[in-house]
Amino acid sequence: MNGFRNGLWLAAICVALAGPALAAPAATSAEAIDSYVRGYAEGGNFSGVVRVERDGRLLFERAYGYADRARKIPNTPATRFHIASMSMQFTAAAALRLVDRGAMTLDTPASALVDGLTWGDAVTVRHLLTERSGLPDINARDDYNDILQKPQTPKSLVDYVSGQPLLFKPGEKFLREEHSAYNLLALIVETKAHKPFADAVGDLVFKPLGMSEAAIDDDRPLPGAVARGYQVAGRVGVEPAQAIHWSAKAGNASVALSARDEAKWVRALFSGGFLSPASRDAALSPAERVGYGWFKSSQSQRFGGPAYTMNGRSPGFASYVLYLPDERLTVVALSNTYSSSTTSLGEDVAALALGRPVEGFHPMAGKVAIAEAPLSFHFGPDFYRPNADLRLEAADGGWTLRWPGDSLDALIPVGPDRFVDRAYWQDVVLKRDAQGRLTGLVYDRFTGVPVAGGAP
Image (cartoon, rainbow, N blue to C red; front, top):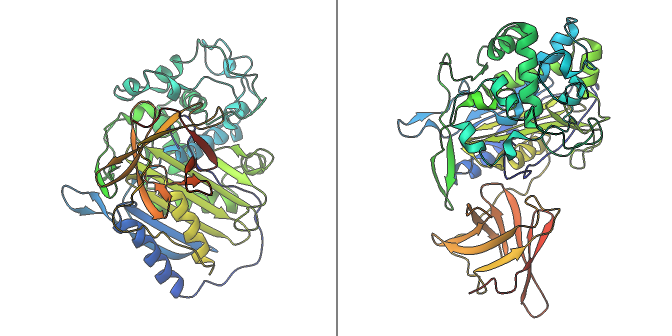
């Protein structure tokens, strides 16, 4: 989820444990899951590990693609991946462990924990954990790419926003993912634990849970290998992603771990005992849809019950985790390809594990002609990029969308006038009137209208 086009992120949902023990699905579930995932992997849209557990038992675990394409080193179940915004789960867990130890409370103001915050009296630990602090977002800064190219610390990241005014009254609303809130939580954790953030999370969370393949990447050498990150290129290709300093994502996106360690964390959180009852209830309460590193819903539209989910994207990586309490089902999909396909893939894998049919992903072969292109479409103020113009263009034997700033997303054709944005894995549909004239472009749930003079 991290930093992708100021709000273009997917979500799903959360709550409650219970229900009788469930029998494992038939062996054909694993075959169906593998066949389904290979459709993504063979098209260059997924490279990583998928793990499925049900009722505490391993149902499926398989690795796809390469951890290092140049050296032909394959991904394995032990491969560690940067998990982007899913990292917030562990920042939140470390903070809650400190709450349980009496080092602070959820209602402690930030000013009592960190000096020099102009708004510190108004913002509490709870506001930070639930992403309702109103802090200005470091990821929205014009110089954010420069920030990623330099080593950082939690304090240096907080300093970028500490003197700026709040965007709204703390606790008033959820506006968007608050990367800066979790930078500040990282600083609070290391301040109260009296050690660097990476070491603090290791001592508070990873070591007690036996998560030996999990670590905070603060630019120090990590024990063991971590997959190299790649980004999609054109309709089917991939290329190395731009290198960054992961210390510049302290608190909100700096964890690297294996799929099995993520599943171990889910078991520990939802089975109880790791956090105090009060802290666990705060983290898992569906009263607020977002918080503590999870999206939460008491009634999933797709699965018909409570669901918890989280996804993430950072340069070269994408991640997804889903837990369905009623089914006691966990799905983890970690990829070293920068594409949001992990969310769609993970949800479909969950359906397959439950014995439910899925449509699958079936790209069309060959080039698809669009007589009217190139053409620009204007989107409204509620779009991911408010009031943005997206331009449909031909490139590399197919079609692309050009975003403001000149970034290009390849479109995968899946039907007449229907595509998938390869980078963000969003539906893209051309709308036509009864005479077949192009009247709009639907991107996810938003519709853009043709721009006058947008075609040459």
